[in-house]
Length: 230
Image 1 (cartoon, rainbow, N blue to C red):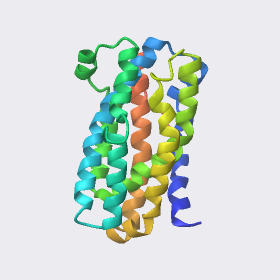
Image 2 (image 1 turned 120 degrees about the vertical axis):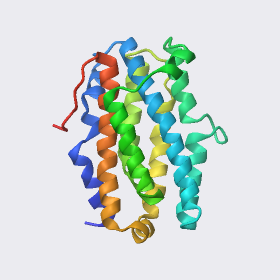
Image 3 (image 1 turned 60 degrees about the vertical axis):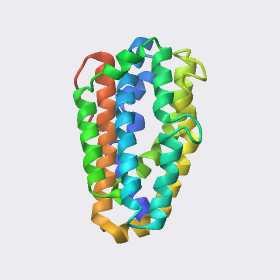
Image 4 (image 1 turned 180 degrees about the horizontal axis):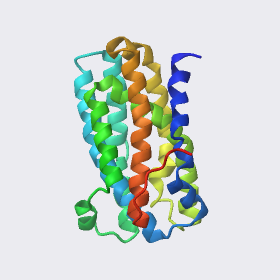
């Protein structure tokens, strides 16, 4: 088993395509209002993630040219409007088209699970740009497979328009590309921070993602619980 396979195998701890949030969305169990409440948490996490992407890109500039190039390309595609609408603005659009006022969205507060998720994402980023990149890249490897299914559920079961659910349509091909770019520099980032740091960061990124979905589900249902992956 090569290094990439060993890292991706960590997904089995918390395989988020089986998370109760997405199981309920696929079945149409949640109301549109509940989905909108969950997506407010998605907005908060994405807003916080923009800063982590920017800081990692800045740090990488002094470390390794290839690492910096990968982080720069991903930052421009995800976090700015230079190559299309940023992910944050796409999620803002989804929420406002669900009837949530922009002022309400900006004032929304994270649920405990989402707070824990964002704190763990920040901790991974503090370990270094390499840890941030590979942690996010491993999540994107699987998220690109889940995202089209969310898009289908949102546009069929919840009758969202293509414009409203666009972030999930774009995440499929875009996150596949981002994951591939991240893993293309795996050997170099291991040389920078060591294998154990990368392995721990990928594991923790999967945990952080599951916590984020716990927080989204809490916002939707009002029930505080944490999924154990089974």
